[in-house]
Length: 631
Ligand code: XCC
Ligand code: SF4
Image (cartoon, rainbow, N blue to C red; front, side):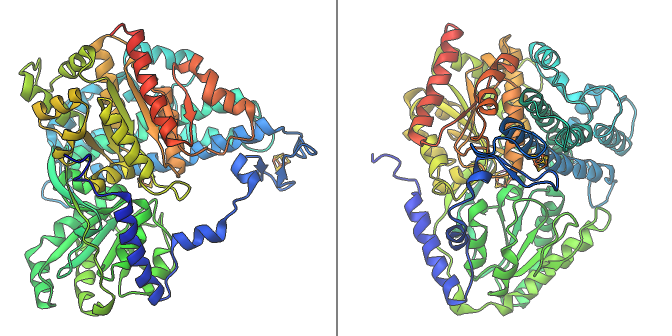
Protein backbone atom coordinates (compact mmCIF):
# COMPACT_ATOMS: atom_id res chain seq x y z
CA UNK A 1 0.00 0.00 0.00
CA UNK A 2 1.21 3.50 -0.79
CA UNK A 3 2.37 5.40 2.25
CA UNK A 4 -0.20 7.72 3.82
CA UNK A 5 -2.39 7.34 0.73
CA UNK A 6 -5.64 8.09 2.55
CA UNK A 7 -4.34 11.40 3.78
CA UNK A 8 -5.20 14.81 2.41
CA UNK A 9 -1.90 16.51 1.59
CA UNK A 10 -0.95 20.08 2.41
CA UNK A 11 -0.68 20.66 -1.35
CA UNK A 12 -4.34 19.70 -1.81
CA UNK A 13 -5.33 22.04 1.01
CA UNK A 14 -3.26 24.84 -0.54
CA UNK A 15 -4.90 24.30 -3.92
CA UNK A 16 -8.31 24.63 -2.27
CA UNK A 17 -7.21 27.84 -0.55
CA UNK A 18 -5.85 29.22 -3.83
CA UNK A 19 -9.22 28.64 -5.50
CA UNK A 20 -10.96 30.44 -2.65
CA UNK A 21 -8.56 33.36 -2.87
CA UNK A 22 -9.53 33.69 -6.54
CA UNK A 23 -13.12 34.30 -5.44
CA UNK A 24 -11.76 36.79 -2.93
CA UNK A 25 -10.01 38.71 -5.69
CA UNK A 26 -13.25 38.96 -7.65
CA UNK A 27 -14.98 40.71 -4.78
CA UNK A 28 -12.00 42.79 -3.71
CA UNK A 29 -11.32 40.91 -0.49
CA UNK A 30 -8.12 41.20 1.49
CA UNK A 31 -6.42 38.07 2.90
CA UNK A 32 -3.79 37.17 5.49
CA UNK A 33 -1.60 35.91 2.67
CA UNK A 34 -1.55 39.47 1.30
CA UNK A 35 -1.14 41.15 4.66
CA UNK A 36 1.87 38.97 5.50
CA UNK A 37 3.56 40.37 2.40
CA UNK A 38 2.77 43.92 3.51
CA UNK A 39 4.26 43.25 6.94
CA UNK A 40 7.49 41.64 5.74
CA UNK A 41 10.24 42.13 6.80
CA UNK A 42 9.24 42.28 10.46
CA UNK A 43 10.92 44.70 12.86
CA UNK A 44 14.23 43.19 14.04
CA UNK A 45 13.97 44.71 17.52
CA UNK A 46 10.49 43.32 18.01
CA UNK A 47 11.58 39.90 16.77
CA UNK A 48 14.51 39.77 19.17
CA UNK A 49 12.46 41.14 22.07
CA UNK A 50 14.89 44.04 22.52
CA UNK A 51 12.47 46.96 22.29
CA UNK A 52 11.02 48.39 25.50
CA UNK A 53 8.04 50.74 25.63
CA UNK A 54 7.09 50.13 29.22
CA UNK A 55 7.52 53.83 30.07
CA UNK A 56 7.26 57.02 28.05
CA UNK A 57 10.96 57.87 28.24
CA UNK A 58 11.28 55.26 25.51
CA UNK A 59 10.73 53.41 23.37
CA UNK A 60 14.27 52.17 24.02
CA UNK A 61 15.92 49.82 21.58
CA UNK A 62 19.07 47.93 22.44
CA UNK A 63 21.98 47.92 19.99
CA UNK A 64 25.75 47.45 20.46
CA UNK A 65 26.03 51.25 20.50
CA UNK A 66 23.17 51.67 22.96
CA UNK A 67 23.45 48.72 25.34
CA UNK A 68 21.05 50.15 27.93
CA UNK A 69 17.68 51.85 27.96
CA UNK A 70 17.34 55.35 29.40
CA UNK A 71 16.61 53.94 32.86
CA UNK A 72 19.69 51.75 32.55
CA UNK A 73 17.88 48.48 31.95
CA UNK A 74 20.03 46.06 29.96
CA UNK A 75 18.93 43.77 27.17
CA UNK A 76 18.35 40.79 29.48
CA UNK A 77 15.97 42.78 31.66
CA UNK A 78 14.08 44.04 28.63
CA UNK A 79 13.77 40.64 26.94
CA UNK A 80 12.85 39.02 30.27
CA UNK A 81 10.16 41.59 31.01
CA UNK A 82 8.71 41.24 27.54
CA UNK A 83 8.61 37.48 27.97
CA UNK A 84 6.83 37.73 31.31
CA UNK A 85 4.25 40.12 29.85
CA UNK A 86 3.77 37.75 26.94
CA UNK A 87 3.05 34.98 29.46
CA UNK A 88 0.78 37.10 31.63
CA UNK A 89 -1.35 37.98 28.60
CA UNK A 90 -1.89 34.31 27.88
CA UNK A 91 -2.50 33.32 31.50
CA UNK A 92 -5.06 36.12 31.87
CA UNK A 93 -6.86 35.08 28.70
CA UNK A 94 -7.13 31.37 29.42
CA UNK A 95 -8.00 31.99 33.04
CA UNK A 96 -10.68 34.54 32.22
CA UNK A 97 -12.23 31.94 29.92
CA UNK A 98 -12.16 29.59 32.92
CA UNK A 99 -13.81 32.27 35.01
CA UNK A 100 -16.67 32.62 32.50
CA UNK A 101 -17.23 28.88 32.72
CA UNK A 102 -17.38 29.15 36.53
CA UNK A 103 -20.06 31.82 36.10
CA UNK A 104 -21.95 29.59 33.68
CA UNK A 105 -21.80 26.79 36.25
CA UNK A 106 -23.13 29.22 38.81
CA UNK A 107 -26.02 30.02 36.46
CA UNK A 108 -27.18 26.40 36.13
CA UNK A 109 -30.65 25.46 37.31
CA UNK A 110 -33.12 22.65 36.87
CA UNK A 111 -34.80 23.11 33.48
CA UNK A 112 -32.69 26.22 32.73
CA UNK A 113 -30.54 27.15 29.74
CA UNK A 114 -27.57 25.56 31.45
CA UNK A 115 -27.81 22.35 33.41
CA UNK A 116 -25.47 19.89 35.07
CA UNK A 117 -24.84 17.15 32.51
CA UNK A 118 -22.17 15.24 34.41
CA UNK A 119 -23.24 15.19 38.07
CA UNK A 120 -20.74 12.44 38.89
CA UNK A 121 -17.86 14.59 37.80
CA UNK A 122 -19.21 17.50 39.79
CA UNK A 123 -19.34 15.34 42.91
CA UNK A 124 -15.82 14.08 42.31
CA UNK A 125 -14.47 17.61 42.11
CA UNK A 126 -16.47 18.66 45.18
CA UNK A 127 -14.97 15.78 47.17
CA UNK A 128 -11.51 16.64 45.91
CA UNK A 129 -12.02 20.18 47.20
CA UNK A 130 -13.44 19.07 50.54
CA UNK A 131 -16.98 20.24 49.81
CA UNK A 132 -19.74 18.18 51.42
CA UNK A 133 -21.86 16.38 48.81
CA UNK A 134 -24.09 14.16 50.96
CA UNK A 135 -27.78 14.92 50.71
CA UNK A 136 -27.18 18.10 48.72
CA UNK A 137 -29.29 19.14 45.76
CA UNK A 138 -27.11 18.87 42.66
CA UNK A 139 -27.71 22.51 41.74
CA UNK A 140 -26.87 23.74 45.22
CA UNK A 141 -23.68 21.75 44.93
CA UNK A 142 -22.95 23.19 41.48
CA UNK A 143 -23.31 26.72 42.84
CA UNK A 144 -21.09 26.00 45.81
CA UNK A 145 -18.39 24.45 43.64
CA UNK A 146 -18.64 27.34 41.15
CA UNK A 147 -18.26 29.89 43.90
CA UNK A 148 -15.31 28.04 45.38
CA UNK A 149 -13.78 27.99 41.90
CA UNK A 150 -14.31 31.72 41.51
CA UNK A 151 -12.51 32.26 44.81
CA UNK A 152 -9.44 30.62 43.29
CA UNK A 153 -9.03 33.80 41.28
CA UNK A 154 -8.70 36.16 44.20
CA UNK A 155 -8.22 34.31 47.45
CA UNK A 156 -5.79 36.18 49.69
CA UNK A 157 -3.96 33.13 51.00
CA UNK A 158 -2.93 29.67 49.85
CA UNK A 159 -2.15 28.12 46.49
CA UNK A 160 -4.26 26.61 43.69
CA UNK A 161 -6.42 23.71 44.81
CA UNK A 162 -5.77 21.55 41.76
CA UNK A 163 -2.01 21.44 42.44
CA UNK A 164 -2.83 18.51 44.72
CA UNK A 165 -3.58 16.45 41.62
CA UNK A 166 0.14 16.35 40.80
CA UNK A 167 2.43 13.65 42.19
CA UNK A 168 3.93 14.66 45.53
CA UNK A 169 7.38 14.85 43.99
CA UNK A 170 6.11 17.52 41.59
CA UNK A 171 4.37 19.49 44.31
CA UNK A 172 7.64 19.52 46.22
CA UNK A 173 9.53 20.76 43.16
CA UNK A 174 7.05 23.62 42.74
CA UNK A 175 7.33 24.51 46.38
CA UNK A 176 11.10 24.48 46.41
CA UNK A 177 11.34 26.46 43.18
CA UNK A 178 8.99 29.05 44.68
CA UNK A 179 6.58 28.78 41.76
CA UNK A 180 3.40 27.37 43.30
CA UNK A 181 0.70 29.61 41.89
CA UNK A 182 -1.40 31.50 44.43
CA UNK A 183 -4.62 33.27 43.41
CA UNK A 184 -4.80 33.35 39.60
CA UNK A 185 -5.44 37.06 39.31
CA UNK A 186 -2.60 37.71 41.71
CA UNK A 187 -0.10 35.97 39.44
CA UNK A 188 -1.23 38.01 36.46
CA UNK A 189 -1.23 41.23 38.49
CA UNK A 190 2.13 40.54 39.99
CA UNK A 191 3.54 39.86 36.54
CA UNK A 192 2.35 43.30 35.42
CA UNK A 193 3.73 44.84 38.60
CA UNK A 194 7.11 43.14 38.24
CA UNK A 195 7.43 44.43 34.69
CA UNK A 196 6.49 48.02 35.51
CA UNK A 197 9.23 50.58 35.01
CA UNK A 198 11.73 50.33 37.82
CA UNK A 199 10.71 46.90 39.16
CA UNK A 200 12.33 43.60 38.15
CA UNK A 201 15.09 43.48 35.58
CA UNK A 202 16.73 40.31 36.88
CA UNK A 203 16.08 37.56 34.29
CA UNK A 204 16.00 34.80 36.88
CA UNK A 205 13.17 36.49 38.79
CA UNK A 206 11.24 37.29 35.62
CA UNK A 207 11.43 33.73 34.31
CA UNK A 208 10.48 32.26 37.69
CA UNK A 209 7.36 34.42 37.68
CA UNK A 210 6.66 33.36 34.07
CA UNK A 211 6.56 29.75 35.21
CA UNK A 212 4.33 30.62 38.15
CA UNK A 213 1.92 32.67 36.05
CA UNK A 214 1.84 29.83 33.52
CA UNK A 215 1.03 27.32 36.27
CA UNK A 216 -1.83 29.52 37.49
CA UNK A 217 -3.29 29.02 34.02
CA UNK A 218 -2.62 25.31 33.44
CA UNK A 219 -3.34 24.05 36.94
CA UNK A 220 -5.79 26.84 37.77
CA UNK A 221 -7.86 28.78 35.25
CA UNK A 222 -7.62 26.37 32.32
CA UNK A 223 -8.14 23.33 34.51
CA UNK A 224 -11.31 24.84 35.93
CA UNK A 225 -12.38 25.78 32.40
CA UNK A 226 -12.03 22.19 31.26
CA UNK A 227 -13.46 20.46 34.31
CA UNK A 228 -16.51 22.67 34.64
CA UNK A 229 -17.17 22.55 30.89
CA UNK A 230 -17.39 18.79 31.31
CA UNK A 231 -19.76 19.16 34.24
CA UNK A 232 -21.93 21.54 32.20
CA UNK A 233 -21.85 19.97 28.77
CA UNK A 234 -20.73 16.41 29.37
CA UNK A 235 -17.33 14.76 29.57
CA UNK A 236 -16.22 13.95 26.01
CA UNK A 237 -16.30 10.37 24.77
CA UNK A 238 -15.18 9.05 21.39
CA UNK A 239 -17.44 10.32 18.62
CA UNK A 240 -17.14 10.32 14.83
CA UNK A 241 -17.01 13.53 12.86
CA UNK A 242 -15.51 15.05 9.72
CA UNK A 243 -12.94 17.74 9.11
CA UNK A 244 -11.85 20.26 6.49
CA UNK A 245 -13.57 22.92 4.42
CA UNK A 246 -15.68 20.32 2.55
CA UNK A 247 -17.87 19.90 5.64
CA UNK A 248 -19.75 23.04 4.61
CA UNK A 249 -22.96 22.16 2.78
CA UNK A 250 -23.99 23.76 -0.48
CA UNK A 251 -27.73 23.33 0.01
CA UNK A 252 -27.92 24.10 3.68
CA UNK A 253 -27.70 27.15 5.90
CA UNK A 254 -24.09 27.14 7.10
CA UNK A 255 -23.42 28.56 10.54
CA UNK A 256 -19.78 28.67 11.57
CA UNK A 257 -18.97 28.87 15.28
CA UNK A 258 -15.54 30.29 16.05
CA UNK A 259 -13.76 31.22 19.25
CA UNK A 260 -13.40 29.37 22.53
CA UNK A 261 -16.15 29.38 25.15
CA UNK A 262 -18.57 26.45 24.76
CA UNK A 263 -21.28 28.39 26.62
CA UNK A 264 -22.09 30.07 23.29
CA UNK A 265 -21.49 27.28 20.79
CA UNK A 266 -23.44 24.71 22.82
CA UNK A 267 -26.50 26.94 22.59
CA UNK A 268 -26.07 27.56 18.87
CA UNK A 269 -25.76 23.82 18.25
CA UNK A 270 -28.92 23.27 20.29
CA UNK A 271 -31.03 25.84 18.45
CA UNK A 272 -29.76 24.75 15.05
CA UNK A 273 -31.56 21.46 15.81
CA UNK A 274 -34.76 23.19 16.87
CA UNK A 275 -37.65 21.95 14.65
CA UNK A 276 -38.96 25.51 14.38
CA UNK A 277 -35.61 26.72 13.02
CA UNK A 278 -35.29 23.79 10.64
CA UNK A 279 -38.78 24.47 9.31
CA UNK A 280 -37.84 28.10 8.82
CA UNK A 281 -34.69 27.06 6.94
CA UNK A 282 -36.80 24.89 4.64
CA UNK A 283 -39.24 27.72 4.07
CA UNK A 284 -36.25 29.83 3.03
CA UNK A 285 -35.30 27.23 0.43
CA UNK A 286 -32.50 25.43 2.27
CA UNK A 287 -32.38 21.70 3.02
CA UNK A 288 -31.57 22.34 6.66
CA UNK A 289 -29.05 23.90 9.01
CA UNK A 290 -25.40 22.86 9.15
CA UNK A 291 -23.21 24.00 12.04
CA UNK A 292 -19.45 23.65 11.66
CA UNK A 293 -16.57 25.02 13.70
CA UNK A 294 -13.29 26.86 13.45
CA UNK A 295 -10.50 26.97 16.07
CA UNK A 296 -11.05 25.81 19.65
CA UNK A 297 -14.81 26.28 19.74
CA UNK A 298 -14.83 23.72 16.99
CA UNK A 299 -12.86 21.31 19.17
CA UNK A 300 -15.34 21.80 22.01
CA UNK A 301 -18.45 20.99 19.99
CA UNK A 302 -16.75 18.29 17.92
CA UNK A 303 -15.71 16.47 21.10
CA UNK A 304 -19.18 16.59 22.61
CA UNK A 305 -21.54 16.45 19.62
CA UNK A 306 -19.53 15.37 16.58
CA UNK A 307 -20.04 18.80 14.99
CA UNK A 308 -17.71 18.88 11.94
CA UNK A 309 -14.55 20.98 11.91
CA UNK A 310 -14.33 23.38 8.96
CA UNK A 311 -10.77 24.41 9.64
CA UNK A 312 -8.20 25.82 11.98
CA UNK A 313 -6.78 29.26 12.70
CA UNK A 314 -5.41 30.25 9.29
CA UNK A 315 -8.52 28.95 7.53
CA UNK A 316 -10.98 31.22 9.27
CA UNK A 317 -11.13 33.49 6.22
CA UNK A 318 -11.62 30.46 3.97
CA UNK A 319 -15.03 29.68 5.41
CA UNK A 320 -16.30 33.11 4.35
CA UNK A 321 -14.57 32.84 0.98
CA UNK A 322 -16.72 29.79 0.13
CA UNK A 323 -19.56 32.24 -0.40
CA UNK A 324 -21.74 29.72 1.44
CA UNK A 325 -21.35 30.98 5.00
CA UNK A 326 -24.60 32.53 6.22
CA UNK A 327 -23.11 33.51 9.59
CA UNK A 328 -19.84 33.28 11.40
CA UNK A 329 -20.61 33.52 15.10
CA UNK A 330 -17.72 34.32 17.43
CA UNK A 331 -17.04 34.83 21.11
CA UNK A 332 -13.46 35.40 22.25
CA UNK A 333 -9.84 34.85 21.14
CA UNK A 334 -8.09 34.08 17.86
CA UNK A 335 -10.73 35.86 15.79
CA UNK A 336 -9.29 37.87 12.91
CA UNK A 337 -10.62 41.45 12.88
CA UNK A 338 -10.31 40.87 9.12
CA UNK A 339 -13.57 38.92 9.27
CA UNK A 340 -15.48 42.21 9.51
CA UNK A 341 -14.46 43.73 6.18
CA UNK A 342 -14.27 40.28 4.55
CA UNK A 343 -17.84 39.40 5.46
CA UNK A 344 -18.92 42.69 3.84
CA UNK A 345 -17.63 41.37 0.49
CA UNK A 346 -20.11 38.49 0.80
CA UNK A 347 -23.60 38.03 2.22
CA UNK A 348 -22.09 36.61 5.43
CA UNK A 349 -23.22 37.95 8.81
CA UNK A 350 -20.27 38.38 11.15
CA UNK A 351 -21.82 38.11 14.61
CA UNK A 352 -19.82 39.10 17.68
CA UNK A 353 -21.30 38.17 21.05
CA UNK A 354 -18.87 39.10 23.81
CA UNK A 355 -18.05 42.49 25.31
CA UNK A 356 -14.49 41.12 25.50
CA UNK A 357 -14.17 40.84 21.72
CA UNK A 358 -15.85 43.81 20.02
CA UNK A 359 -15.00 44.37 16.36
CA UNK A 360 -15.89 46.85 13.64
CA UNK A 361 -18.17 45.69 10.81
CA UNK A 362 -19.91 43.08 12.93
CA UNK A 363 -23.44 42.59 14.25
CA UNK A 364 -23.15 42.57 18.01
CA UNK A 365 -25.63 40.33 19.81
CA UNK A 366 -24.52 40.26 23.41
CA UNK A 367 -24.68 36.82 24.91
CA UNK A 368 -25.75 36.48 28.56
CA UNK A 369 -25.98 33.34 30.68
CA UNK A 370 -29.52 34.22 31.74
CA UNK A 371 -30.81 34.96 28.23
CA UNK A 372 -28.58 32.48 26.38
CA UNK A 373 -31.47 30.60 24.82
CA UNK A 374 -33.09 33.72 23.37
CA UNK A 375 -29.74 35.08 22.18
CA UNK A 376 -28.82 31.84 20.45
CA UNK A 377 -32.21 31.54 18.81
CA UNK A 378 -31.95 35.10 17.50
CA UNK A 379 -28.54 34.33 16.03
CA UNK A 380 -29.67 31.11 14.34
CA UNK A 381 -32.70 32.91 12.94
CA UNK A 382 -30.55 35.70 11.56
CA UNK A 383 -28.39 33.13 9.77
CA UNK A 384 -31.36 31.24 8.37
CA UNK A 385 -32.98 34.40 7.05
CA UNK A 386 -29.71 35.29 5.37
CA UNK A 387 -29.70 32.16 3.17
CA UNK A 388 -31.67 33.89 0.42
CA UNK A 389 -29.00 36.58 0.12
CA UNK A 390 -26.37 34.12 -1.08
CA UNK A 391 -24.84 34.92 -4.45
CA UNK A 392 -24.86 31.63 -6.32
CA UNK A 393 -22.01 32.71 -8.62
CA UNK A 394 -19.68 33.14 -5.63
CA UNK A 395 -20.34 29.75 -4.04
CA UNK A 396 -17.40 27.35 -4.12
CA UNK A 397 -16.95 24.71 -1.44
CA UNK A 398 -13.75 22.75 -2.11
CA UNK A 399 -14.55 19.07 -1.75
CA UNK A 400 -11.97 18.24 0.87
CA UNK A 401 -12.91 16.35 3.99
CA UNK A 402 -11.71 13.50 6.14
CA UNK A 403 -13.28 11.26 8.73
CA UNK A 404 -12.11 11.68 12.31
CA UNK A 405 -12.80 10.08 15.67
CA UNK A 406 -12.48 12.66 18.43
CA UNK A 407 -13.34 13.05 22.10
CA UNK A 408 -10.50 11.49 24.08
CA UNK A 409 -10.82 12.99 27.52
CA UNK A 410 -8.70 11.39 30.24
CA UNK A 411 -11.82 9.55 31.36
CA UNK A 412 -12.42 8.27 27.82
CA UNK A 413 -8.82 7.16 27.34
CA UNK A 414 -8.92 5.16 30.56
CA UNK A 415 -12.22 3.62 29.56
CA UNK A 416 -10.84 2.54 26.17
CA UNK A 417 -7.87 0.92 27.88
CA UNK A 418 -10.08 -0.82 30.40
CA UNK A 419 -12.20 -2.25 27.63
CA UNK A 420 -9.18 -4.19 26.43
CA UNK A 421 -7.57 -5.31 29.65
CA UNK A 422 -10.48 -5.59 32.05
CA UNK A 423 -7.96 -4.42 34.59
CA UNK A 424 -9.99 -1.69 36.16
CA UNK A 425 -9.37 -1.14 39.82
CA UNK A 426 -12.14 1.37 40.25
CA UNK A 427 -14.89 2.93 38.17
CA UNK A 428 -12.49 5.58 36.89
CA UNK A 429 -9.97 3.16 35.46
CA UNK A 430 -6.23 3.45 35.40
CA UNK A 431 -3.39 4.27 33.06
CA UNK A 432 -1.58 1.02 33.95
CA UNK A 433 -2.19 -0.79 30.62
CA UNK A 434 -0.73 2.24 28.87
CA UNK A 435 2.29 2.21 31.16
CA UNK A 436 2.77 -1.51 30.46
CA UNK A 437 2.83 -0.81 26.72
CA UNK A 438 5.46 1.87 27.24
CA UNK A 439 7.52 -0.32 29.56
CA UNK A 440 7.42 -3.17 27.07
CA UNK A 441 8.52 -0.78 24.31
CA UNK A 442 5.45 -1.47 22.17
CA UNK A 443 4.92 2.25 22.54
CA UNK A 444 8.11 4.26 22.89
CA UNK A 445 6.33 7.22 24.50
CA UNK A 446 4.01 10.11 23.73
CA UNK A 447 4.12 13.59 22.30
CA UNK A 448 1.60 16.22 23.30
CA UNK A 449 1.29 18.32 20.16
CA UNK A 450 -0.60 21.55 20.52
CA UNK A 451 -0.93 25.10 19.33
CA UNK A 452 -1.78 27.28 16.46
CA UNK A 453 -0.84 28.04 12.88
CA UNK A 454 1.55 30.85 12.10
CA UNK A 455 2.28 32.24 8.62
CA UNK A 456 5.98 31.97 9.54
CA UNK A 457 5.52 28.26 8.90
CA UNK A 458 3.82 26.71 5.89
CA UNK A 459 0.40 26.15 7.47
CA UNK A 460 -0.15 22.69 8.97
CA UNK A 461 3.04 21.24 7.47
CA UNK A 462 4.97 21.16 10.71
CA UNK A 463 2.06 19.59 12.60
CA UNK A 464 1.40 16.95 9.99
CA UNK A 465 4.99 16.07 9.07
CA UNK A 466 6.05 15.80 12.71
CA UNK A 467 3.06 13.62 13.52
CA UNK A 468 3.83 11.26 10.65
CA UNK A 469 7.42 10.91 11.75
CA UNK A 470 6.51 10.27 15.38
CA UNK A 471 3.85 7.71 14.49
CA UNK A 472 6.42 5.79 12.43
CA UNK A 473 8.55 5.72 15.56
CA UNK A 474 5.80 4.14 17.68
CA UNK A 475 5.18 7.39 19.52
CA UNK A 476 1.51 8.03 20.20
CA UNK A 477 0.16 11.56 19.84
CA UNK A 478 -2.18 13.44 22.10
CA UNK A 479 -3.24 16.69 20.50
CA UNK A 480 -5.37 19.76 21.06
CA UNK A 481 -6.20 23.16 19.60
CA UNK A 482 -5.40 23.94 16.00
CA UNK A 483 -2.85 21.14 15.95
CA UNK A 484 -5.72 18.71 16.50
CA UNK A 485 -7.54 20.21 13.55
CA UNK A 486 -4.47 19.94 11.35
CA UNK A 487 -4.39 16.22 12.17
CA UNK A 488 -8.11 15.77 11.56
CA UNK A 489 -8.06 17.62 8.23
CA UNK A 490 -5.17 15.49 7.03
CA UNK A 491 -6.93 12.27 8.04
CA UNK A 492 -4.69 11.30 10.93
CA UNK A 493 -7.67 10.92 13.29
CA UNK A 494 -9.23 8.35 11.01
CA UNK A 495 -8.69 4.96 12.63
CA UNK A 496 -7.37 3.74 9.28
CA UNK A 497 -4.30 5.94 9.81
CA UNK A 498 -3.04 3.27 12.22
CA UNK A 499 -1.85 1.20 9.28
CA UNK A 500 0.92 3.68 8.57
CA UNK A 501 2.34 3.64 12.10
CA UNK A 502 5.22 1.64 13.48
CA UNK A 503 4.37 -2.00 14.25
CA UNK A 504 3.90 -1.46 17.99
CA UNK A 505 1.63 1.53 17.75
CA UNK A 506 -0.32 -0.11 14.95
CA UNK A 507 -1.03 -3.07 17.23
CA UNK A 508 -2.11 -0.87 20.13
CA UNK A 509 -4.48 1.13 17.89
CA UNK A 510 -6.07 -2.03 16.50
CA UNK A 511 -6.42 -3.63 19.92
CA UNK A 512 -7.82 -0.59 21.69
CA UNK A 513 -9.72 0.58 18.59
CA UNK A 514 -8.36 4.12 18.61
CA UNK A 515 -6.80 6.39 16.00
CA UNK A 516 -3.04 6.95 16.49
CA UNK A 517 -3.61 10.66 17.09
CA UNK A 518 -5.90 11.26 20.06
CA UNK A 519 -7.98 14.44 20.10
CA UNK A 520 -7.96 15.76 23.68
CA UNK A 521 -9.79 18.99 22.93
CA UNK A 522 -9.27 22.72 22.89
CA UNK A 523 -6.33 24.71 24.22
CA UNK A 524 -7.72 25.03 27.74
CA UNK A 525 -7.95 21.23 27.54
CA UNK A 526 -4.17 21.00 27.65
CA UNK A 527 -5.03 20.79 31.34
CA UNK A 528 -6.38 17.31 30.45
CA UNK A 529 -2.90 16.42 29.27
CA UNK A 530 -1.48 17.63 32.59
CA UNK A 531 -3.93 15.42 34.47
CA UNK A 532 -3.07 12.46 32.23
CA UNK A 533 0.67 12.99 32.75
CA UNK A 534 0.12 13.31 36.50
CA UNK A 535 -1.98 10.14 36.63
CA UNK A 536 0.58 8.20 34.61
CA UNK A 537 3.39 9.36 36.91
CA UNK A 538 1.37 8.42 40.00
CA UNK A 539 0.33 5.01 38.65
CA UNK A 540 3.95 4.38 37.66
CA UNK A 541 5.42 5.68 40.91
CA UNK A 542 7.74 8.21 39.26
CA UNK A 543 7.78 11.97 38.71
CA UNK A 544 6.28 13.54 35.59
CA UNK A 545 9.75 14.62 34.42
CA UNK A 546 10.68 10.94 34.13
CA UNK A 547 7.75 9.91 31.93
CA UNK A 548 8.74 9.45 28.25
CA UNK A 549 6.57 12.30 27.04
CA UNK A 550 7.42 15.67 25.49
CA UNK A 551 5.38 18.68 24.45
CA UNK A 552 5.50 20.42 21.10
CA UNK A 553 4.01 23.58 19.58
CA UNK A 554 5.53 23.73 16.11
CA UNK A 555 3.39 26.52 14.65
CA UNK A 556 2.32 28.49 17.73
CA UNK A 557 1.49 32.21 17.59
CA UNK A 558 -0.55 33.42 20.60
CA UNK A 559 0.25 34.69 24.10
CA UNK A 560 -1.80 31.78 25.37
CA UNK A 561 0.68 29.41 23.77
CA UNK A 562 3.52 31.05 25.71
CA UNK A 563 1.60 30.64 28.94
CA UNK A 564 0.96 27.00 28.04
CA UNK A 565 4.64 26.45 27.27
CA UNK A 566 5.55 27.74 30.70
CA UNK A 567 3.20 25.46 32.57
CA UNK A 568 4.00 22.41 30.50
CA UNK A 569 7.72 22.88 31.17
CA UNK A 570 7.06 23.71 34.84
CA UNK A 571 5.10 20.47 35.05
CA UNK A 572 8.30 18.64 34.07
CA UNK A 573 7.63 18.09 30.36
CA UNK A 574 10.31 19.16 27.85
CA UNK A 575 8.74 21.42 25.25
CA UNK A 576 9.73 22.00 21.62
CA UNK A 577 8.81 25.23 19.89
CA UNK A 578 8.92 25.89 16.16
CA UNK A 579 8.72 29.67 16.50
CA UNK A 580 10.97 31.80 18.74
CA UNK A 581 9.15 33.59 21.61
CA UNK A 582 10.91 36.94 21.01
CA UNK A 583 13.83 36.02 23.25
CA UNK A 584 16.69 35.83 20.72
CA UNK A 585 18.06 39.15 21.94
CA UNK A 586 19.14 37.87 25.35
CA UNK A 587 21.66 35.10 25.95
CA UNK A 588 20.69 35.12 29.62
CA UNK A 589 16.96 34.68 29.05
CA UNK A 590 17.56 32.00 26.43
CA UNK A 591 20.12 30.41 28.76
CA UNK A 592 17.41 30.08 31.38
CA UNK A 593 14.50 28.98 29.17
CA UNK A 594 16.50 26.64 26.98
CA UNK A 595 18.98 25.67 29.68
CA UNK A 596 19.10 26.11 33.40
CA UNK A 597 15.41 26.11 34.33
CA UNK A 598 15.93 22.36 34.04
CA UNK A 599 17.63 22.63 37.46
CA UNK A 600 14.41 24.07 38.90
CA UNK A 601 11.72 21.95 37.26
CA UNK A 602 13.44 19.05 35.46
CA UNK A 603 12.54 20.25 31.96
CA UNK A 604 13.14 23.15 29.58
CA UNK A 605 12.43 24.53 26.11
CA UNK A 606 14.02 23.72 22.78
CA UNK A 607 13.47 26.19 19.97
CA UNK A 608 14.08 24.51 16.63
CA UNK A 609 12.97 25.99 13.34
CA UNK A 610 14.04 22.97 11.28
CA UNK A 611 11.14 20.54 11.46
CA UNK A 612 13.12 17.46 10.48
CA UNK A 613 15.64 18.19 13.20
CA UNK A 614 12.92 18.92 15.74
CA UNK A 615 11.39 15.52 15.08
CA UNK A 616 14.73 13.80 15.63
CA UNK A 617 15.29 15.76 18.84
CA UNK A 618 11.90 14.70 20.22
CA UNK A 619 12.51 11.04 19.43
CA UNK A 620 15.92 11.36 21.09
CA UNK A 621 14.46 13.03 24.17
CA UNK A 622 11.93 10.21 24.56
CA UNK A 623 14.60 7.53 24.11
CA UNK A 624 16.77 9.26 26.72
CA UNK A 625 13.94 9.17 29.24
CA UNK A 626 13.48 5.48 28.55
CA UNK A 627 17.15 4.84 29.09
CA UNK A 628 17.10 6.68 32.40
CA UNK A 629 14.22 4.41 33.47
CA UNK A 630 16.08 1.31 32.29
CA UNK A 631 13.35 0.33 29.86
FE1 XCC B 1 -6.01 30.04 18.82
FE2 XCC B 1 -7.41 27.96 20.52
FE3 XCC B 1 -3.80 28.84 18.83
FE4 XCC B 1 -5.80 27.80 17.61
S1 XCC B 1 -4.38 26.78 18.90
S2 XCC B 1 -4.86 29.62 17.10
S3 XCC B 1 -4.53 29.93 20.47
S4 XCC B 1 -7.57 28.52 18.58
NI1 XCC B 1 -5.00 27.28 20.99
FE1 SF4 C 1 13.37 52.70 28.24
FE2 SF4 C 1 13.62 51.85 30.78
FE3 SF4 C 1 11.40 53.12 30.01
FE4 SF4 C 1 11.89 50.67 29.10
S1 SF4 C 1 11.49 51.25 31.22
S2 SF4 C 1 11.16 52.42 27.90
S3 SF4 C 1 14.13 50.70 28.95
S4 SF4 C 1 13.49 53.96 30.06
